[in-house]
Length: 222
Ligand code: DC
Image (tube, rainbow, N blue to C red; front, side):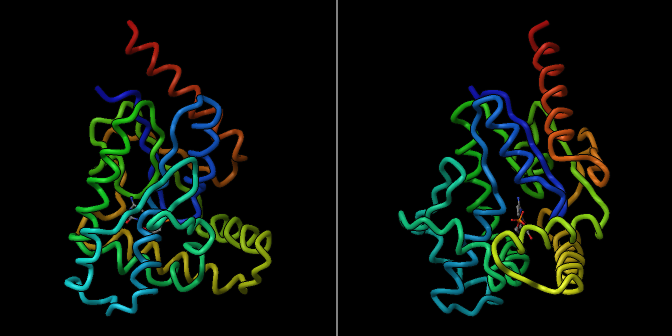
């Protein structure tokens, strides 16, 4: 019997991971960042040197051990939480995540992970494909400029100084690829609640989601 499931979807830079992590921490629930899983596969593919555009080259996934625990991600027990944020991974993750074979394997892992109790899971297809029965579905948006500003600030904090124009272009390219791919494109579920975070702080959004969870839990209790 699954616990309470919150699905949080949205485009790159909409604040999904930060917000989902905070919501989960406040409630002492499990947070699962599915984007980190697609990034880990991309990192492995880059390190192994497979031909990234060949869908048949991903058979290594059958035996690959990917584990997400307490906001750290492990590949064969190696903590790759920092390595998966590299430019090389960011530039290739949309391609890798477009292959149905890769998605099938990761979606299975994500569903298993969601069975362990109350979860907040974030990604692109959580409300539509991974957890279509989720108790609460949120779709976070923000305009491109604001999302780019957030990514830029995140890069600066990590000592990286990509020009703003590159950050905007990267986000636009990823939006385009993630929402037009054939397999599970980024799309808002019909029963999701859309939250535009452009003019909201992280804490405003977290509070709003906590309110919505509280309301749903009360409805379930009635
Ligand atoms: O959230 P993120 O930027 O770390 O996600 C990295 C990429 O992974 C994103 O460009 C698309 C892909 N992704 C996906 O296809 N489905 C998900 N559920 C999560 C991420």
